[in-house]
Length: 262
Figure 1 (cartoon, rainbow, N blue to C red):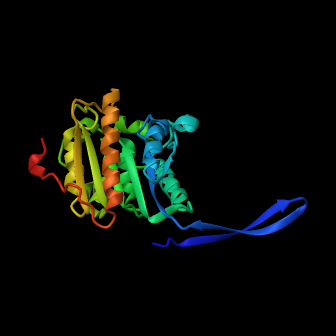
Figure 2 (cartoon, rainbow, N blue to C red):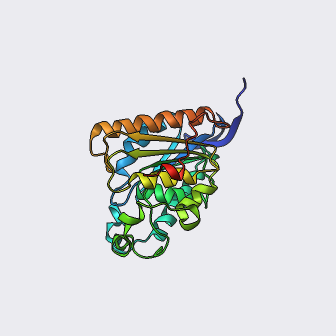
């Protein structure tokens, strides 16, 4: 089978002259994946994993949300609005890369990063959405500094009750999402309890496929290396299946009914 090619005109300097040349390359477009770290983390937590996924044939991007790493001095002022704008800006940069297929963009987010990634799907085209222990926040106080949310909200109580897509921006975005979804839960997660996971799964009613997995014995931060490896295997396997079947994945369709929320 013949592959399409692209011509690029070149100038080749030699001995004080410039020769004309043409570089002919295959036209290949690759999926793009955007990795979003959690609150208090940085892109460092995803670099190794992104490199592994890139070897599968993806253009991967990691970045630091405002208020983290080099911009840590903004930690006390950065809001969800700021960080969502950071994420959208990173998406826009990734999709402009010449090797990236604009219609094949995935977002991989953990905790706060998963929450933001879910919301982003309502603002930019996303084909694959992978959420590990996605956090959930009430919508009010959207522009307040993120560090104040624990003080202004009873997150522990909020994350243990049934929340509908109509009353939460992230769940509303999931309800409208039509791509493929992976949600990974930690069995012993005191930060993002099972009810939050169930709310996310129940919201994904229009997704093309929904795959849910649990990391047995794991806590929120995956402090044990074995949990990190297990999550990496789950993510890589799911992405490989999604990319192998871009027009109709065979992933497990497993939304959770409200009656199953414990």
